[in-house]
Amino acid sequence: MKINDGIYLVGSGQAGCMISYISDSHVYLVETAAGNILIDAGVGLECGRIIENIKKDGLDPENVEYIFLTHSHADHAGGTSWLKEKLGCKVYISKAEAHLLRESDLMDQGLDVAIEDGIYPPDYRYTNCDPDVEIEGGESFTIGEWDIETIHTPGHSTGSMCYLFRSGGRTALFSGDVVVHGGKLMFLNCEGSVMADMRRSMPKLGGRGIEELYPGHGCWVCAGGQSHVDKAIEALRHLGPPPNAF
Image (cartoon, rainbow, N blue to C red; front, side, top):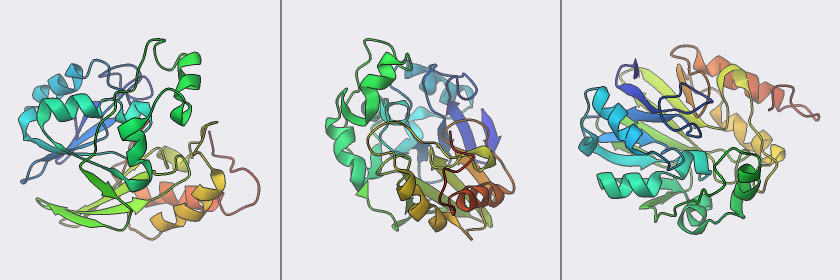
């Protein structure tokens, strides 16, 4: 599903467009001349549907060279192992959560509670994966025509990472669950989700001139993305809980 020049939605569950498994986050594909990039990997159930969506968009899955994970929660990272083995791509994740991708079990990250709440099937198991690159935030990469900056933004989780893509005057932010459409903020009742951390890290996204905003769930925007981010920053300036948190 092409949503902008060189950017496709190839996975999305019930909190999005329902083009892959019901529990999947958005999975984006960024097309580049030096190999394509997946942003996140879904929950790891029915991963073949992500591959089929790539094919339906007229793209070759074998051209996927990278997976950039926004964080290690199951709906974003559970499919990493399967996709890495299938496609032979390199996996990038924050250093703060690399151990969770590598060793996480049901008790980590509130996964046991999520299963009890019916978010994942009762027999769901998180498939671990060894990442290839651990990032701390502040690194810059150039892949094809895109310059990519990593921005460590803890709050939703300890190692939440945003990826700022720039190319030919375009500025696009892949924000995971840090900030979504309307400046809404996502918190969970589990280890690692800390409002005070988000208050400290969110200003890193200020003044970036973001046009395109691609969050992990819900609607994306192709213009005026900075205004959505700025709403989140403003909501976190005050002592009380932000009214746009959910």
